[in-house]
Length: 466
Image (cartoon, one colour):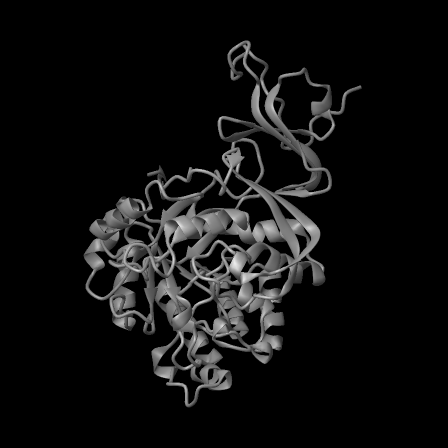
């Protein structure tokens, strides 16, 4: 007796039948077989069948061997190499136009594809102009058109005086808007004060828009008293982060708006988030690979500088517990690169940003496996969670009907990071020289290889393809 399809799978309609391809043509464009396919139901041996850029069916691993010749244009057998859904990175600073010498759509999305990331959502700063109006969004989209190796969506920005732009940006398809509660580092994207945050949240609540927040209380931030990392860390305390998160929670509860805290670095914020959710506040939060894997005790130079800062080992361990408990919905890069000269000074003066877009998956997997987590958890944190945040139901999981965004990932293979070999525009990363476990072997975007040839990424909107 033939093995029945596993739960959540479906056979592909035959040629000439309803839902099937025309007679005489291959049923499928691609079949990828792996003994470790990571699905929402678990890790299973499966054959992932792809037609017209979508996952047409999940079939038992061995069933495809007996299917008639010519059923697929291409078949790839990965064996024990795992197959993951394409990662969704909702926190990427591409910086184009205006600061394309820092990064750009071509280089950033090539790095993304090499790292197994098939969708990125671009932050509204540090490009010039910042994405704080529909006109600026259109300039950004024109800069990205035809240059992206993966799919790209956009955040808008909330700054003093642009409350009237928030709904037009929403209608134009941004996935939400970002604000800072403390100085952003660039003059053209000023922070919101408490009154400005309240007004922006009220506006967003009127059409159920999403606010994402860089949460540090400016009243508790100080200038570093010296050039060393301990001075920089002391200038941006955990209390400053916690107080700002408390403010967001209070105003989200007052206005009924949806809010999301970006790049949580301090575990002291977790109990605030837990209490807020218990009280029905519509709030979520993320963290980043560097907060989960690096520690203040090991920081060795300005390549490690970011805001909020990398904290102590005990704090890192608590963040992992928050991730496992679901208080943090996902892990995204906060890829914020700059030219090397902006990282060459001391901690007081260097640009605050980590370059890691190509490395996030092996960085997180290296630590996750050591802590007893599996590929299912990593896929949930780096694909399903971010896809849910921005409302992309057709991405982030291997299931019939989803985009065939797939990553062949060898979870046992080790490599040493060579910053000069990365696709980021500049060879600056705190992971340079670090040995990691897990290698991205191949990435598919809608069933076709991504990153190596002509750019095929699409520009996404909250409503679909832009």
